[in-house]
Length: 69
Image (cartoon, rainbow, N blue to C red; front, top):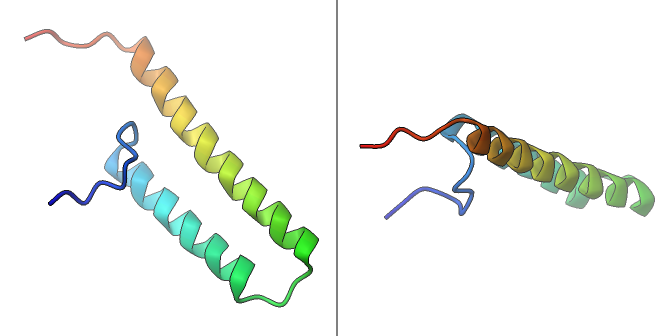
């Protein structure tokens, strides 16, 4: 059984940071007493950060030539 979360493009460290960011956003959205507009903003910010991190990883992997065996 694999511990990967479907984030095949990310390294282990990046995947851990994404999971931590998701947990912090989950707590901020569901367990904090803030207005709905701020909760939507937090969710959009977290989604954007995760999306940009995975996009940057893909771009970096495309730029690096793969070793052929």
